[in-house]
Amino acid sequence: MNLNSELKPFGRIISFIFVFCLFSSAVYAQGDVYLSLSATGKRSDIAVESFAAPAKTQDDVKYAQLLKEVVQNDLILCRYFNIIVGDPEPNTPFDTRMIFWEKKGASVLLSASVKVKTDIITIDVKLYDVISTELIWKQSFRKETSNYRLMAHEISDEIVRRFTGETGIACSKITFINNSTRFKELYLIDYDGYNLRRLTKDNKLNILPKWSPDGQQIIYTSYLYNNPDLFALNLVKNRRSIISKYQGLNAAGAFSPDGKRILLTLSRGKYPNLYLISPTGEILRRMTDGSYIDTSPSFAPNGQEIVFISDRPGYPQLYIMNIDGGNLRRLTTAGFCDSPAWSPRGDKIVFTMRQQRGNYDLFVYDLPSSKITRLTNNQRNNENPSWSPDGRFIAFASTRSGKSEIYVMAIDGSGTRKLAEIPDSSYTPSWSPNLLDK
Image (cartoon, rainbow, N blue to C red; front, side, top):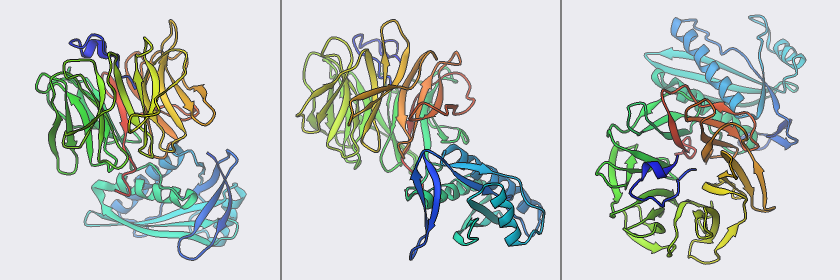
């Protein structure tokens, strides 16, 4: 997204553009049972049986099928598993089922039983070690039928946690801007491209949404009152409030990891510099001061450093500094940079860069090695990257289809998928934190 067109009153402002898993063994210990994964780059072979509906009512059969489809898709998208399908004959004895799946190459079997009563789904989920036939994990889930997709995502995330020790991302969401109403409004969608919701109906320009660490709020810049002010939309209370409304630019930057501070760009009638403010808008500290433009800040996960864009060398480049304003240093690159985002794991920064006479593409800067890896190439413009909460995927905007749309890919640039078929153009995605634990 180029703010030279969006923010004409600020002509000099640069754009705010922005594994592994060979199943090795089941480790049995007191309490929870976790499955260990090695870092070989291979995936675990998991069999997903058709979910059973013992009562065979119409609703039981319907939701058993729907839940299986969503869970299976989640397990594919997480890229931890090879999915093995193809049910054994009905009423096959348990031990024979295990032999059936072993011959198909499965290491683990996922099975489930579904019951629906007065619009409430109850599902009992089980994981088995195919070789030993031991029950690894079982859990019951209960939810209204209208929330069956969320139930399936919760199951998927728990399965991932059993394998990795970290919760999966199936319950996460992505917010972005879309112009299908002729205005740029704020939207929300599940990580897998379902449940699209429009969040604003302002008939104004809204840009640059960012999530709060608790997943309850989205901050964004809006021209609702004809000045680019910073707003917060509380999704839990369904309430919007204005945070920063200084004359001039109040550009959504980023929350600190603890949610107690916000970094943003304020111009206040002068050069756009970085400021640290409270969630209520009180200025805590001016972070940069000079006759140059500093934008697009992102916190390190430790909360002690930030990365941002500055044109102090004469063109936009990546800079890092401590949160107290010290230890400023430039990350050397070979083009015009924009929209950096620090990874949740702390070791990488993804950013947009345009090299001479080229398009905007995505790159990853590996901090330990200072190595830069290119993620996109010859696919028109690719901008505004945002990390998944587990740091394994990136959402971004791309014009590869002829219009700006939201895509998701792995951090090595593989497995790119369009988030959803959404009318007109979509911009500046921001991936939520993990919402399962919120």
